[in-house]
Length: 154
Image (cartoon, rainbow, N blue to C red):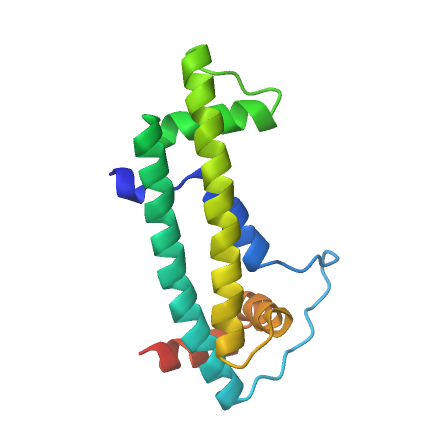
């Protein structure tokens, strides 16, 4: 069960790498032209990025285990710090706050390292990060592109 829990910082990791475009409501996205070769590079990078993300999540969970903080409690504390209307179920002790701060710092380092690794994966596949993100955003909006990616992944 613990392995399935997602640390709040992972949300930031995914959001930072797979940036979404701001669009005006009702505006149709412009189609992105992606050759089969480029899409192959994208798919290879995407599969390697998934592995980096899994390893990152395992490292983050290990940090929380070392600090004796459950992912649920970490997320609860994180949310209480970033959302003024959210209140902790149980008050934070000074010892728990110290362990939280250590974990938070270590998780930030893991996140930064992971972002570098993912950028390197993309570049090693012959794409730049901006183009990868452009294809990624198009993939979320274009069923045809989704189908092409699905076929390449099978």
